[in-house]
Amino acid sequence: MRKYIVANWKMNKTIGEAVDFAKKVKAVTLGIDENFVICPTNICLKSVADELKNSKIKVGAQNCYKESHGAYTGEVSPAMIKDAGCDYVIIGHSERRQIFGETDELVNQKIKLAIENGLNVILCIGETLEQKENYKQVLKAQLQTALDGVDANGENLIIAYEPVWAIGTGKVASIEDIKNVHAYIKQVAYNELKYLPPVLYGGSVKPNNAKEILELDDVDGVLIGGASLDVNSYVEIATRR
Ligand code: PGA
Image (cartoon, rainbow, N blue to C red; front, side):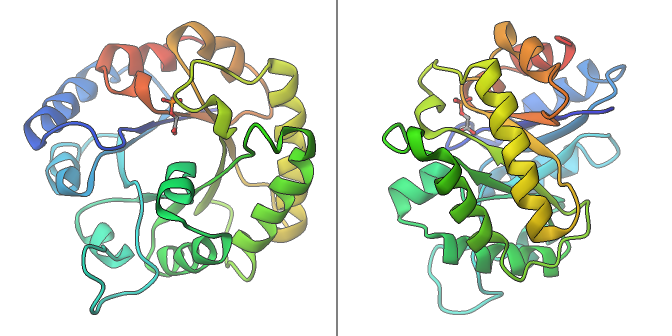
């Protein structure tokens, strides 16, 4: 089964650097049969999507707003993201939640509008270090609110499990924890959606730990931050399984 290899560049790369990456990644992924998705900053979306138009690599935004248009200075709507040539959008990343105060209710509104506009959503959930003991409760609450009333069809919603304490820290969840948590997420998501969405792991995924993680049956792919900024390390992750 193909796995998702998703790059979250966060606030990195100029347009020139992003297009340069896109050119290279097209060439080096030619013989690799995985679902590649690259999420640059909004200002790079159109240029990267144009560069990757006739390739198998899809492009996604890192966030969107919950309204289609209007007086929302600085925000971008799902329709605009789609218009830029994207197929995906990340919603509810822990940096959005922690730095910009996004709530599960806002995440839910964004997901609904993104799906209505034909985008595939990558919904991020995850517990903080303090919540680690109660991860089931935390993840269940995040999922139930975020997915409330969401009309997902099996292809347009992906869940990314990203323990907050593992993001950008070099600390990866143990293989045993990833197995257990992914199985739990699938169970809760199935109750909400009535089908099993793909579940990705994110948090300090690197070429040297990707193989073990991607080999797990309940892991349908990875969401990569730091290690996705370099084209070789990004592609190396996809080839390590
Ligand atoms: P990281 O980030 O791979 O740098 O830990 C992952 C993410 O935030 O999606």
